[in-house]
Length: 232
Length: 232
DNA sequence: CGTGAATGTCATCGTTCGGCAACAATAGGG
DNA sequence: CCCTATTGTTGCCGAACGATGACATTCACG
Image (cartoon, rainbow over all chains, first blue to last red; front, side, top):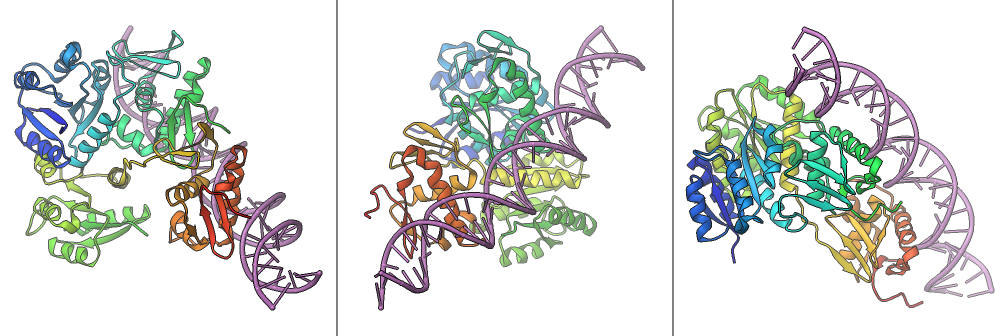
Protein backbone atom coordinates (compact mmCIF):
# COMPACT_ATOMS: atom_id res chain seq x y z
CA UNK A 1 0.00 0.00 0.00
CA UNK A 2 1.36 3.36 -1.00
CA UNK A 3 2.28 5.78 1.72
CA UNK A 4 -0.10 8.68 1.72
CA UNK A 5 1.24 12.17 2.29
CA UNK A 6 -1.18 14.95 3.16
CA UNK A 7 -0.03 18.35 1.96
CA UNK A 8 -1.60 21.28 3.76
CA UNK A 9 -0.48 24.43 2.01
CA UNK A 10 -2.40 27.37 0.66
CA UNK A 11 -0.06 28.42 -2.10
CA UNK A 12 -0.93 26.19 -4.99
CA UNK A 13 2.45 26.61 -6.65
CA UNK A 14 4.28 25.15 -3.69
CA UNK A 15 1.61 22.52 -3.25
CA UNK A 16 2.07 21.35 -6.81
CA UNK A 17 5.81 21.32 -6.52
CA UNK A 18 5.64 19.28 -3.35
CA UNK A 19 3.08 16.90 -4.79
CA UNK A 20 5.27 16.34 -7.79
CA UNK A 21 8.25 15.55 -5.62
CA UNK A 22 6.25 13.26 -3.38
CA UNK A 23 4.76 11.22 -6.17
CA UNK A 24 8.08 10.94 -7.91
CA UNK A 25 9.41 9.45 -4.70
CA UNK A 26 6.79 6.74 -4.90
CA UNK A 27 4.34 8.18 -2.39
CA UNK A 28 0.79 9.31 -2.84
CA UNK A 29 0.10 13.04 -2.32
CA UNK A 30 -3.23 14.43 -1.13
CA UNK A 31 -3.91 18.13 -1.42
CA UNK A 32 -5.48 20.46 1.09
CA UNK A 33 -5.59 24.23 0.75
CA UNK A 34 -6.71 24.90 4.30
CA UNK A 35 -7.47 23.23 7.58
CA UNK A 36 -11.06 22.35 6.64
CA UNK A 37 -9.97 20.50 3.56
CA UNK A 38 -7.25 18.83 5.55
CA UNK A 39 -9.73 17.53 8.09
CA UNK A 40 -11.98 16.27 5.36
CA UNK A 41 -9.06 14.39 3.84
CA UNK A 42 -8.14 12.90 7.19
CA UNK A 43 -11.71 11.78 7.77
CA UNK A 44 -11.45 9.98 4.47
CA UNK A 45 -8.20 8.30 5.34
CA UNK A 46 -5.59 8.95 7.98
CA UNK A 47 -2.41 9.80 6.11
CA UNK A 48 1.00 8.37 6.86
CA UNK A 49 2.56 11.78 7.21
CA UNK A 50 1.45 15.40 7.11
CA UNK A 51 3.30 18.26 5.46
CA UNK A 52 2.02 21.37 7.11
CA UNK A 53 2.54 24.96 6.17
CA UNK A 54 3.27 27.25 9.08
CA UNK A 55 1.11 30.07 7.81
CA UNK A 56 -2.38 29.07 6.83
CA UNK A 57 -5.60 31.01 6.30
CA UNK A 58 -7.81 30.67 9.37
CA UNK A 59 -6.27 28.28 11.84
CA UNK A 60 -2.50 28.50 11.89
CA UNK A 61 -0.39 25.48 11.10
CA UNK A 62 0.80 25.05 14.62
CA UNK A 63 -2.70 25.10 16.02
CA UNK A 64 -3.64 22.45 13.57
CA UNK A 65 -0.62 20.42 14.57
CA UNK A 66 -1.72 20.60 18.19
CA UNK A 67 -5.18 19.51 17.21
CA UNK A 68 -3.77 16.53 15.34
CA UNK A 69 -1.80 15.55 18.41
CA UNK A 70 -4.82 15.79 20.60
CA UNK A 71 -6.96 13.51 18.49
CA UNK A 72 -6.54 9.83 19.22
CA UNK A 73 -6.81 9.00 15.55
CA UNK A 74 -3.97 11.18 14.36
CA UNK A 75 -1.79 11.22 17.43
CA UNK A 76 0.95 9.13 15.90
CA UNK A 77 1.00 10.65 12.46
CA UNK A 78 4.32 12.39 11.95
CA UNK A 79 4.25 16.04 10.97
CA UNK A 80 6.76 18.03 9.00
CA UNK A 81 6.40 21.79 9.13
CA UNK A 82 7.08 24.00 6.16
CA UNK A 83 8.32 27.33 7.43
CA UNK A 84 9.57 30.46 5.73
CA UNK A 85 12.97 31.79 6.47
CA UNK A 86 12.79 33.93 9.56
CA UNK A 87 10.10 31.87 11.21
CA UNK A 88 12.77 29.50 12.30
CA UNK A 89 12.85 30.88 15.77
CA UNK A 90 9.48 29.40 16.46
CA UNK A 91 10.88 25.97 16.19
CA UNK A 92 10.82 25.36 19.86
CA UNK A 93 7.12 26.05 19.89
CA UNK A 94 6.74 23.52 17.14
CA UNK A 95 8.64 20.91 19.01
CA UNK A 96 6.28 21.44 21.90
CA UNK A 97 3.37 20.85 19.59
CA UNK A 98 4.92 17.56 18.60
CA UNK A 99 6.21 18.49 15.19
CA UNK A 100 8.73 15.96 13.94
CA UNK A 101 10.82 18.05 11.63
CA UNK A 102 11.10 21.36 9.88
CA UNK A 103 11.88 22.27 6.34
CA UNK A 104 12.68 25.88 5.68
CA UNK A 105 11.52 27.55 2.49
CA UNK A 106 12.86 27.75 -0.02
CA UNK A 107 13.55 24.06 -0.01
CA UNK A 108 14.36 21.71 -2.82
CA UNK A 109 12.32 18.70 -3.76
CA UNK A 110 15.30 16.59 -3.01
CA UNK A 111 15.68 17.86 0.50
CA UNK A 112 12.00 17.49 1.27
CA UNK A 113 11.90 13.90 0.14
CA UNK A 114 14.99 13.14 2.19
CA UNK A 115 13.34 14.59 5.27
CA UNK A 116 10.12 12.69 4.69
CA UNK A 117 12.00 9.45 4.42
CA UNK A 118 14.08 10.26 7.46
CA UNK A 119 11.03 10.95 9.58
CA UNK A 120 9.14 7.91 8.37
CA UNK A 121 12.13 5.72 9.01
CA UNK A 122 11.92 6.67 12.62
CA UNK A 123 8.77 5.03 13.85
CA UNK A 124 10.02 4.03 17.23
CA UNK A 125 11.17 5.93 20.25
CA UNK A 126 8.64 8.66 20.22
CA UNK A 127 6.04 8.58 22.97
CA UNK A 128 2.47 9.77 22.66
CA UNK A 129 2.78 13.39 23.50
CA UNK A 130 6.07 14.08 21.83
CA UNK A 131 8.12 13.05 24.79
CA UNK A 132 11.07 10.80 24.35
CA UNK A 133 12.91 8.50 26.66
CA UNK A 134 16.25 6.93 26.01
CA UNK A 135 19.19 5.74 28.01
CA UNK A 136 17.91 7.07 31.32
CA UNK A 137 17.14 10.47 29.86
CA UNK A 138 13.67 11.78 29.30
CA UNK A 139 12.52 14.75 27.29
CA UNK A 140 9.13 16.15 28.10
CA UNK A 141 8.19 17.75 24.81
CA UNK A 142 5.24 19.88 25.89
CA UNK A 143 7.00 21.09 29.01
CA UNK A 144 10.20 21.60 27.10
CA UNK A 145 12.21 20.00 29.84
CA UNK A 146 14.82 17.35 30.24
CA UNK A 147 15.05 14.86 33.08
CA UNK A 148 17.86 12.56 34.05
CA UNK A 149 16.53 9.95 36.43
CA UNK A 150 13.68 12.29 37.39
CA UNK A 151 16.06 15.11 38.10
CA UNK A 152 15.48 18.24 36.09
CA UNK A 153 18.35 19.23 33.83
CA UNK A 154 19.03 22.85 33.06
CA UNK A 155 19.71 23.17 29.37
CA UNK A 156 19.98 25.89 26.74
CA UNK A 157 17.85 26.16 23.61
CA UNK A 158 20.37 24.89 21.10
CA UNK A 159 21.55 22.12 23.36
CA UNK A 160 17.94 21.17 23.82
CA UNK A 161 17.32 20.91 20.11
CA UNK A 162 20.53 18.99 19.63
CA UNK A 163 19.63 16.57 22.39
CA UNK A 164 16.11 16.23 21.10
CA UNK A 165 17.29 15.38 17.63
CA UNK A 166 19.86 12.90 18.88
CA UNK A 167 17.40 11.23 21.20
CA UNK A 168 14.85 10.84 18.45
CA UNK A 169 17.52 9.47 16.14
CA UNK A 170 19.60 7.24 18.36
CA UNK A 171 22.04 4.54 17.36
CA UNK A 172 22.98 6.31 14.21
CA UNK A 173 25.94 8.40 13.17
CA UNK A 174 25.37 11.93 11.95
CA UNK A 175 28.02 14.04 10.34
CA UNK A 176 28.46 17.62 11.37
CA UNK A 177 26.90 18.72 8.11
CA UNK A 178 23.84 16.60 8.73
CA UNK A 179 23.48 17.91 12.25
CA UNK A 180 23.73 21.44 10.93
CA UNK A 181 21.01 20.68 8.40
CA UNK A 182 18.67 19.19 10.94
CA UNK A 183 19.23 21.40 13.93
CA UNK A 184 20.29 24.73 12.56
CA UNK A 185 18.25 24.49 9.39
CA UNK A 186 19.44 23.97 5.88
CA UNK A 187 19.59 27.61 4.92
CA UNK A 188 21.63 29.06 7.74
CA UNK A 189 25.34 29.27 7.43
CA UNK A 190 27.37 28.09 10.38
CA UNK A 191 30.84 26.63 10.62
CA UNK A 192 31.03 22.90 11.04
CA UNK A 193 33.27 23.30 14.06
CA UNK A 194 30.40 24.94 15.85
CA UNK A 195 28.84 21.53 16.17
CA UNK A 196 31.84 20.42 18.20
CA UNK A 197 31.32 23.22 20.62
CA UNK A 198 27.68 22.49 21.16
CA UNK A 199 28.36 18.81 21.52
CA UNK A 200 30.85 19.79 24.16
CA UNK A 201 28.30 21.98 25.92
CA UNK A 202 25.72 19.27 25.78
CA UNK A 203 28.12 16.80 27.30
CA UNK A 204 28.95 19.27 29.98
CA UNK A 205 25.34 19.69 31.00
CA UNK A 206 24.88 15.93 31.04
CA UNK A 207 28.05 15.31 32.97
CA UNK A 208 26.69 15.85 36.50
CA UNK A 209 24.17 13.11 35.77
CA UNK A 210 26.72 10.73 34.27
CA UNK A 211 24.88 10.75 31.00
CA UNK A 212 27.58 12.42 28.98
CA UNK A 213 28.83 9.15 27.54
CA UNK A 214 25.59 8.78 25.64
CA UNK A 215 26.98 11.33 23.24
CA UNK A 216 29.71 9.53 21.39
CA UNK A 217 32.33 10.62 18.93
CA UNK A 218 32.85 8.59 15.80
CA UNK A 219 36.18 9.72 14.53
CA UNK A 220 36.10 10.74 10.91
CA UNK A 221 32.33 10.39 10.67
CA UNK A 222 30.51 12.48 13.22
CA UNK A 223 28.55 11.90 16.40
CA UNK A 224 26.22 9.26 17.67
CA UNK A 225 23.72 8.97 20.49
CA UNK A 226 23.78 5.49 21.89
CA UNK A 227 22.94 3.55 25.01
CA UNK A 228 25.80 1.08 24.63
CA UNK A 229 28.95 2.90 25.69
CA UNK A 230 32.00 3.48 23.60
CA UNK A 231 34.53 0.70 24.08
CA UNK A 232 37.98 2.23 24.12
CA UNK B 1 38.75 13.21 -8.27
CA UNK B 2 38.10 16.88 -7.87
CA UNK B 3 34.54 18.07 -7.78
CA UNK B 4 33.77 20.20 -10.79
CA UNK B 5 31.58 23.26 -10.35
CA UNK B 6 30.06 24.88 -13.41
CA UNK B 7 29.55 28.61 -13.01
CA UNK B 8 26.99 30.11 -15.36
CA UNK B 9 27.10 33.85 -14.87
CA UNK B 10 27.39 36.70 -17.37
CA UNK B 11 29.06 39.25 -15.13
CA UNK B 12 32.72 38.37 -15.22
CA UNK B 13 33.48 40.08 -11.92
CA UNK B 14 31.11 37.85 -10.02
CA UNK B 15 32.24 34.86 -12.01
CA UNK B 16 35.84 35.41 -11.02
CA UNK B 17 34.99 35.94 -7.39
CA UNK B 18 32.99 32.77 -7.32
CA UNK B 19 35.67 30.82 -9.17
CA UNK B 20 38.24 31.98 -6.68
CA UNK B 21 36.13 30.89 -3.76
CA UNK B 22 35.40 27.55 -5.36
CA UNK B 23 38.97 26.70 -6.15
CA UNK B 24 40.14 27.79 -2.75
CA UNK B 25 37.66 25.32 -1.32
CA UNK B 26 39.36 22.54 -3.23
CA UNK B 27 36.93 22.32 -6.10
CA UNK B 28 37.45 22.88 -9.77
CA UNK B 29 35.56 25.80 -11.32
CA UNK B 30 34.47 25.91 -14.96
CA UNK B 31 33.31 29.18 -16.48
CA UNK B 32 30.35 29.85 -18.74
CA UNK B 33 29.10 33.28 -19.69
CA UNK B 34 25.85 32.11 -21.19
CA UNK B 35 23.75 29.05 -21.76
CA UNK B 36 25.52 28.05 -24.97
CA UNK B 37 28.87 27.96 -23.27
CA UNK B 38 27.35 26.12 -20.37
CA UNK B 39 26.03 23.41 -22.63
CA UNK B 40 29.35 23.07 -24.32
CA UNK B 41 31.01 22.63 -20.95
CA UNK B 42 28.48 20.03 -19.93
CA UNK B 43 28.99 18.13 -23.16
CA UNK B 44 32.66 18.02 -22.24
CA UNK B 45 32.07 16.76 -18.74
CA UNK B 46 28.98 16.65 -16.57
CA UNK B 47 29.76 18.83 -13.57
CA UNK B 48 29.11 17.87 -9.99
CA UNK B 49 27.14 21.02 -9.30
CA UNK B 50 25.90 24.04 -11.25
CA UNK B 51 25.91 27.61 -10.01
CA UNK B 52 23.33 29.37 -12.13
CA UNK B 53 22.62 33.05 -12.42
CA UNK B 54 18.97 33.94 -12.46
CA UNK B 55 19.31 36.56 -15.15
CA UNK B 56 21.18 35.47 -18.22
CA UNK B 57 21.37 36.83 -21.76
CA UNK B 58 19.18 34.78 -24.05
CA UNK B 59 17.66 31.85 -22.20
CA UNK B 60 16.90 32.69 -18.59
CA UNK B 61 18.50 30.76 -15.82
CA UNK B 62 15.32 29.06 -14.81
CA UNK B 63 14.63 27.79 -18.30
CA UNK B 64 18.10 26.37 -18.35
CA UNK B 65 17.50 24.73 -15.00
CA UNK B 66 14.38 23.07 -16.38
CA UNK B 67 16.30 21.88 -19.36
CA UNK B 68 18.96 20.35 -17.14
CA UNK B 69 16.30 18.52 -15.20
CA UNK B 70 14.70 17.17 -18.34
CA UNK B 71 17.91 15.70 -19.67
CA UNK B 72 18.71 12.24 -18.36
CA UNK B 73 22.38 13.07 -18.20
CA UNK B 74 22.06 16.06 -15.91
CA UNK B 75 18.94 15.15 -13.99
CA UNK B 76 20.72 14.51 -10.74
CA UNK B 77 23.16 17.38 -10.89
CA UNK B 78 22.33 19.78 -8.07
CA UNK B 79 21.71 23.41 -8.96
CA UNK B 80 22.22 26.50 -6.86
CA UNK B 81 20.64 29.69 -8.12
CA UNK B 82 22.28 33.06 -7.76
CA UNK B 83 19.57 35.66 -7.46
CA UNK B 84 19.59 39.39 -6.95
CA UNK B 85 17.66 40.87 -4.11
CA UNK B 86 14.06 41.39 -5.11
CA UNK B 87 13.93 38.34 -7.30
CA UNK B 88 13.32 36.27 -4.25
CA UNK B 89 9.63 36.03 -4.92
CA UNK B 90 10.25 33.99 -8.01
CA UNK B 91 11.78 31.30 -5.92
CA UNK B 92 8.78 29.10 -6.05
CA UNK B 93 9.15 28.89 -9.79
CA UNK B 94 12.72 27.88 -9.34
CA UNK B 95 11.85 25.24 -6.82
CA UNK B 96 9.39 23.79 -9.27
CA UNK B 97 12.20 23.60 -11.75
CA UNK B 98 14.09 21.50 -9.27
CA UNK B 99 16.59 24.01 -8.00
CA UNK B 100 18.29 22.84 -4.83
CA UNK B 101 19.16 26.10 -3.14
CA UNK B 102 19.38 29.82 -3.54
CA UNK B 103 22.03 32.32 -2.72
CA UNK B 104 20.99 35.94 -2.75
CA UNK B 105 23.39 38.58 -4.01
CA UNK B 106 25.38 40.05 -2.53
CA UNK B 107 26.74 36.92 -0.94
CA UNK B 108 30.04 36.17 0.73
CA UNK B 109 32.45 33.62 -0.62
CA UNK B 110 32.22 31.70 2.57
CA UNK B 111 28.49 31.50 2.50
CA UNK B 112 28.52 30.29 -1.08
CA UNK B 113 31.03 27.58 -0.36
CA UNK B 114 29.04 26.51 2.66
CA UNK B 115 25.92 26.21 0.56
CA UNK B 116 27.71 24.23 -2.09
CA UNK B 117 29.01 21.79 0.45
CA UNK B 118 25.65 21.55 2.15
CA UNK B 119 23.86 20.77 -1.08
CA UNK B 120 26.42 18.26 -2.23
CA UNK B 121 26.34 16.65 1.15
CA UNK B 122 22.59 16.37 0.97
CA UNK B 123 22.55 14.85 -2.47
CA UNK B 124 25.01 12.11 -1.76
CA UNK B 125 23.79 12.45 1.78
CA UNK B 126 21.51 10.21 3.78
CA UNK B 127 23.20 7.16 2.41
CA UNK B 128 21.32 4.23 3.74
CA UNK B 129 24.19 1.96 4.51
CA UNK B 130 22.73 -1.43 5.09
CA UNK B 131 23.70 -3.74 7.85
CA UNK B 132 25.71 -6.84 7.19
CA UNK B 133 26.03 -10.03 9.14
CA UNK B 134 28.53 -12.73 8.48
CA UNK B 135 30.31 -15.39 10.43
CA UNK B 136 29.11 -14.18 13.81
CA UNK B 137 30.06 -10.61 13.07
CA UNK B 138 27.58 -7.84 12.51
CA UNK B 139 28.11 -4.39 11.10
CA UNK B 140 25.52 -1.74 11.79
CA UNK B 141 26.08 0.66 8.92
CA UNK B 142 23.94 3.60 10.06
CA UNK B 143 25.36 3.41 13.57
CA UNK B 144 28.83 2.81 12.22
CA UNK B 145 29.39 0.00 14.65
CA UNK B 146 30.67 -3.55 14.75
CA UNK B 147 29.36 -6.30 16.99
CA UNK B 148 30.83 -9.70 17.65
CA UNK B 149 28.14 -11.86 19.24
CA UNK B 150 26.32 -8.71 20.34
CA UNK B 151 29.41 -7.28 21.96
CA UNK B 152 30.54 -3.92 20.74
CA UNK B 153 33.93 -3.98 19.06
CA UNK B 154 36.18 -0.96 19.24
CA UNK B 155 37.57 -0.35 15.80
CA UNK B 156 39.37 2.41 13.94
CA UNK B 157 38.12 4.13 10.80
CA UNK B 158 40.31 2.32 8.29
CA UNK B 159 39.86 -1.03 9.93
CA UNK B 160 36.15 -0.39 9.82
CA UNK B 161 36.21 0.31 6.11
CA UNK B 162 38.37 -2.70 5.49
CA UNK B 163 36.09 -4.96 7.48
CA UNK B 164 33.02 -3.51 5.84
CA UNK B 165 34.38 -4.19 2.40
CA UNK B 166 35.46 -7.70 3.24
CA UNK B 167 32.14 -8.53 4.85
CA UNK B 168 30.20 -7.29 1.88
CA UNK B 169 32.45 -9.28 -0.43
CA UNK B 170 33.09 -12.52 1.41
CA UNK B 171 34.45 -15.79 0.11
CA UNK B 172 36.59 -14.12 -2.46
CA UNK B 173 40.25 -13.33 -2.72
CA UNK B 174 41.38 -9.74 -3.17
CA UNK B 175 44.87 -8.69 -4.03
CA UNK B 176 46.49 -5.87 -2.12
CA UNK B 177 46.09 -3.62 -5.13
CA UNK B 178 42.38 -4.34 -5.29
CA UNK B 179 41.94 -3.64 -1.62
CA UNK B 180 43.79 -0.39 -2.02
CA UNK B 181 41.50 0.59 -4.86
CA UNK B 182 38.33 -0.23 -3.00
CA UNK B 183 39.16 0.98 0.46
CA UNK B 184 41.70 3.72 0.04
CA UNK B 185 40.27 5.00 -3.24
CA UNK B 186 41.96 4.87 -6.59
CA UNK B 187 43.49 8.32 -6.34
CA UNK B 188 45.70 7.84 -3.33
CA UNK B 189 49.11 6.32 -3.55
CA UNK B 190 50.01 4.01 -0.75
CA UNK B 191 52.47 1.20 -0.43
CA UNK B 192 51.02 -2.25 -0.85
CA UNK B 193 52.59 -3.42 2.37
CA UNK B 194 50.37 -1.01 4.20
CA UNK B 195 47.52 -3.40 3.54
CA UNK B 196 49.36 -6.04 5.50
CA UNK B 197 49.60 -3.77 8.46
CA UNK B 198 45.94 -2.98 8.47
CA UNK B 199 45.02 -6.61 8.00
CA UNK B 200 47.13 -7.25 11.03
CA UNK B 201 45.38 -4.53 12.99
CA UNK B 202 42.01 -5.83 11.95
CA UNK B 203 42.92 -9.31 13.09
CA UNK B 204 44.13 -7.88 16.34
CA UNK B 205 40.86 -6.14 17.06
CA UNK B 206 38.95 -9.30 16.20
CA UNK B 207 41.23 -11.51 18.24
CA UNK B 208 39.54 -11.05 21.64
CA UNK B 209 36.35 -12.30 20.05
CA UNK B 210 38.00 -15.23 18.29
CA UNK B 211 36.95 -13.88 14.97
CA UNK B 212 40.40 -13.20 13.63
CA UNK B 213 40.50 -16.39 11.60
CA UNK B 214 37.79 -15.00 9.36
CA UNK B 215 40.48 -12.92 7.72
CA UNK B 216 42.59 -15.37 5.76
CA UNK B 217 45.81 -15.11 3.86
CA UNK B 218 46.04 -16.55 0.39
CA UNK B 219 49.71 -16.72 -0.24
CA UNK B 220 50.76 -15.14 -3.50
CA UNK B 221 47.29 -13.71 -4.14
CA UNK B 222 46.03 -11.60 -1.30
CA UNK B 223 43.38 -11.89 1.39
CA UNK B 224 40.00 -13.45 1.77
CA UNK B 225 37.13 -13.13 4.21
CA UNK B 226 35.55 -16.49 4.79
CA UNK B 227 33.47 -18.35 7.35
CA UNK B 228 35.18 -21.70 6.78
CA UNK B 229 38.57 -21.70 8.46
CA UNK B 230 41.85 -22.05 6.67
CA UNK B 231 42.99 -25.65 6.18
CA UNK B 232 46.58 -25.72 7.34
C1' DC C 1 20.68 51.73 27.74
C1' DG C 2 22.91 48.13 30.52
C1' DT C 3 23.39 43.42 31.66
C1' DG C 4 23.72 38.65 31.23
C1' DA C 5 22.80 34.64 28.77
C1' DA C 6 23.41 32.37 24.51
C1' DT C 7 25.84 31.48 20.51
C1' DG C 8 29.28 31.40 16.87
C1' DT C 9 34.26 31.59 15.90
C1' DC C 10 39.06 31.07 16.59
C1' DA C 11 43.55 29.31 18.32
C1' DT C 12 45.67 25.90 20.74
C1' DC C 13 46.53 21.47 22.73
C1' DG C 14 46.52 16.67 23.17
C1' DT C 15 45.34 12.40 21.10
C1' DT C 16 44.67 9.20 17.56
C1' DC C 17 45.50 7.28 13.32
C1' DG C 18 47.77 6.00 9.18
C1' DG C 19 51.84 5.09 6.57
C1' DC C 20 56.29 3.34 6.38
C1' DA C 21 60.48 0.86 7.14
C1' DA C 22 63.06 -2.53 9.46
C1' DC C 23 63.18 -6.88 11.20
C1' DA C 24 61.29 -11.60 12.28
C1' DA C 25 58.87 -15.58 10.83
C1' DT C 26 57.04 -18.69 7.61
C1' DA C 27 55.99 -21.23 3.60
C1' DG C 28 57.16 -23.60 -0.51
C1' DG C 29 60.13 -25.05 -4.20
C1' DG C 30 64.29 -27.09 -5.65
C1' DC D 1 67.27 -29.47 4.02
C1' DC D 2 68.21 -24.96 2.60
C1' DC D 3 67.16 -20.72 0.40
C1' DT D 4 64.32 -17.13 -0.99
C1' DA D 5 60.11 -14.92 -1.77
C1' DT D 6 56.31 -13.67 0.82
C1' DT D 7 53.98 -12.35 4.83
C1' DG D 8 53.65 -11.06 9.93
C1' DT D 9 54.93 -7.87 13.52
C1' DT D 10 56.45 -3.87 15.78
C1' DG D 11 57.87 0.88 16.71
C1' DC D 12 58.18 5.46 15.13
C1' DC D 13 56.84 9.90 13.20
C1' DG D 14 54.06 13.23 11.05
C1' DA D 15 49.52 14.65 9.82
C1' DA D 16 44.82 14.87 10.81
C1' DC D 17 41.28 15.21 13.97
C1' DG D 18 38.63 16.34 17.90
C1' DA D 19 38.39 18.71 22.50
C1' DT D 20 38.62 22.69 24.92
C1' DG D 21 38.95 27.32 26.70
C1' DA D 22 38.81 32.04 25.57
C1' DC D 23 36.88 35.72 23.00
C1' DA D 24 33.49 38.47 20.21
C1' DT D 25 28.95 39.31 19.13
C1' DT D 26 24.21 39.25 19.30
C1' DC D 27 19.89 39.14 21.48
C1' DA D 28 16.32 39.43 24.98
C1' DC D 29 14.87 41.47 28.92
C1' DG D 30 14.72 44.52 32.58
